Amino acid sequence: MKRLVLILGDQLDIDSPALKNIDSKIDQIIMIESANEAQHVWSHKAKIALFLSAMRHFAEGLKQLGLPLVYVQHSPKTIAEELRSKIIDGKFTHLICIEPGEWRLKGAIEGLASELNLVLVMHEDTHFYCSHLEFKAWVANKKELRLEYFYRLMRKTHGILVDQDGNPEGGQWNFDRDNRKPFPKKGPGLIPAPALFEPDEISKAVLAEVEERYSDHPGSLLHFRWPVTRAQALEVLEGFVEHRLATFGIHEDAMWTDTPFGWHSLLSSSLNLKLLNPREVIDAVLVAWKKYDLELATVEGFIRQILGWREFVRGMYYLDMPQMALDNFYGHQNVLPAWYWTGKTKMSCMREAIGQTLQYGYAHHIQRLMVTGNFALLAEVLPKEVCDWYLAIYIDAIEWVELPNTAGMALFASGGRFTSKPYIASGAYIKRMSNYCDTCQYKPDIRFGEGACPVTNLYWNFLIKHRTQFESNPRTRLMTANLSRISEVDQQSIQVHAKGLLSDLHSL
Picture 1 (cartoon, rainbow, N blue to C red):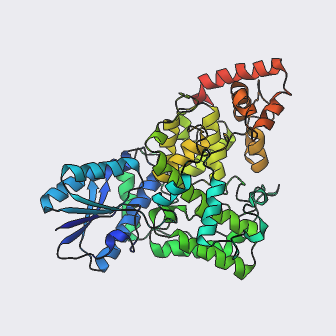
Picture 2 (picture 1 turned 60 degrees about the vertical axis):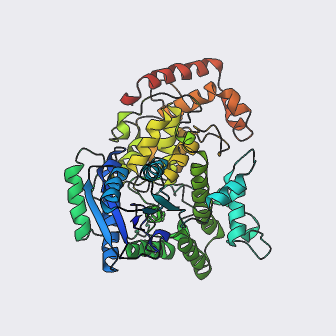
Picture 3 (picture 1 turned 135 degrees about the vertical axis):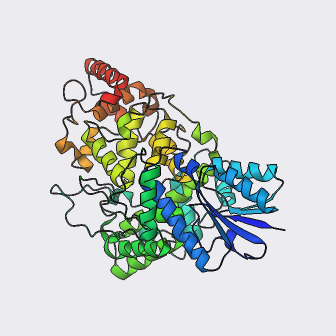
């Protein structure tokens, strides 16, 4: 028996089941830097740099522990191709790994094991609260799959924010309505800075390599200060719960120019690389709640994102793939506008959200859902093109979390499989939640004609086109009620204006 243990770039956990009981005499650990993975989508430079730097730091840790590691740099091959060579050359009989967070890679590894007649031991990722079997048991024969009911089960199962009888703290399960306020009219005021890190020698080498090897890729490395080690990730967590958590909830949906991070935790990349375990994050938040007497709405809102939505979309990804990647409920076919990759658009909201993303590789959930995602849905862009963009452009995007959020939630491509309505809004919502409209040549209250906001126009056009669907849903019926207040003549003008926009999205 000769075992090869594969550690992927988003599995940087020293307590990984794959690393248990390593025998240096017969076992070999392998980590692979695959250029193919960096180019599978046109990845942001900062995303490539984050993965490579975190991987190299983790590899150094394995070496310091005396573990038998082969680290492959700059491989032009796919991960499966590189594995094939190493398995054949080393005459390995067993391949040990953690289940990949991407269906494509999981299939490639399973295919390789079958081809080479290997014993494949693919552990489920223990970072998550809910296993695949538990999620499938919850799904059972349910006609509707909704986060809220799954989230309540998770709270009860794990004893989080519930009393001894399983009742929710504060008498209700969800305080979302308390967490939707915009910043004050004068702006967000002073926000304590998150923990950011000057690149060390390993990171500097990576940044130089990325600039050289991926010079044509989008994004900037000038602001690369992300945590790339577990120690740094723990520092970000501590800084968040000590200095930023208290005001996170109330303004978690708010947006403002030159405020890329707001009160957000910036923990998603560390969680998704497995530098942090969600259990320790939630534990830290619960300790801070009691220690500082924080608002329950803030604490619940944050925990819902991790214990609820993060676990839920992972379950849906493995349940519905590969169909999820093919879904296109509305049959949209438009090409993603080129300015999604440059930020060069006359729409201030899109310019701000995309420009920030190109600088940092980061935008928070409302910028993703209700700005870039909202526009892509209203503009009838082919879901695959939008999903590839999200996977490429955000440093925390791994397919298990990115695809359900983009295709299922932002684009409604799954047709309500696990969301109760399309998440669409006009320019009025963006104006209410940000200051983006203050510097825009378009006016959010104008539906068509000169100065009309493209988001507003396409919103009303979308409602007109899908009026029957929206009227049949209690959660969206109010939208069509508002539509009924617009005259038939104006509705026709909206559609004419929208036809022009949809035929030339690149010029916006």
